[in-house]
Length: 369
Ligand code: UD1
Ligand code: UDP
Figure 1 (cartoon, protein in one colour):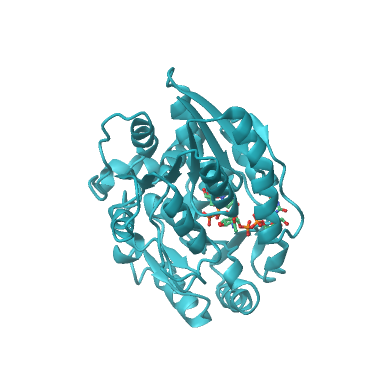
Figure 2 (cartoon, rainbow, N blue to C red):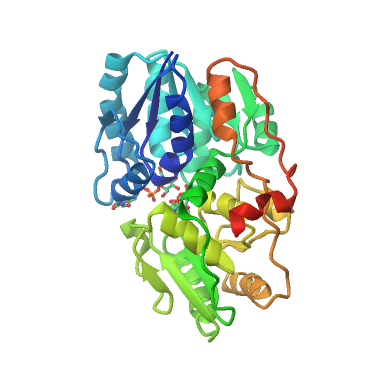
């Protein structure tokens, strides 16, 4: 079986890496990798960490790239690769422009598409933008859907799609476990000093929402007992970081995971960070108006605060001051065996499907210590 995995951004690389590593152990599979490089530095950080050496690099990133130019460039550059490799199947992940372009290009050539992290939905095309539309379009094209959670499978079940659905857990949790295995224990932090870790990058928050999030950070920065660390996404559309937050360059995965583990509260609009925080037992203030990852909210481990400074500060302080206890580490999004299930499904083997919240918090203690 000849598989071609196509991806281009940091989160796709993180979530496909465990699957690529598992495919390397399958002698009957020829697994090839094509990166679009929709991201450059962010992607290369992850490729280096997981020692992934792409077979094809489309080098598509441009400064301040527009969605249409990027989509066109990626489709045009993928097509000759598909024609040359003639894979039995293309594998895409998530909801980026790269994932849509790769799925569509494969569809036009009659190549079956497997979709990793299928079925996440807000049912609001404006948020996340353009990802909600991207992933729904990919679902129409794919004939193998790897739903991370039962809720994602339920979404797909309502959409009259073709092909098979497997609940696998999110492979981002596999990646997290690989990282944790490499970095070892984190030294204990100063108990008198609290840490807020912040990331944000969503396009629908450009402008006024980001300014309001900045105002919330400035209020939180007045606390003497709290540091705010803000690894910045390089998208120039984000504008300047608030003065009081300590801005950092985008961190490599091990350094970022170390910080997540040290954090008392995480403020983020990132999908992957929401999932990883739940696995680590870290409370999350979600800097979005809507989310396709409701599991942590339902478990009381995350609060949807949008960009309203009062909601952001209120939720963060409830955790910082211990008014609300920190959540237990949770396997709501994945148990670290998603890659195994996905490879089994790709090879037509029986799949031992993921059941969330099956593991006692103690089983996760190795993740958080
Ligand atoms: C993209 C995805 C989003 C995902 C996010 C993860 C789309 C439409 N959006 O958003 O779903 O959550 O990645 O990070 O696919 N840049 C660099 N270096 C890099 C990466 C980005 O300079 O390594 C800058 C470039 O100027 C680029 C801009 O960031 O133009 C935006 O990158 P782009 O991939 O278009 O969108 P993201 O906002 O990163
Ligand atoms: N991440 C990282 N360095 C950072 C910020 C995030 O390695 O400075 C990792 C994070 O642990 C997660 C992934 O990047 O695995 C999430 O990517 P991002 O937030 O860019 O995208 P999203 O998940 O929102 O699509």
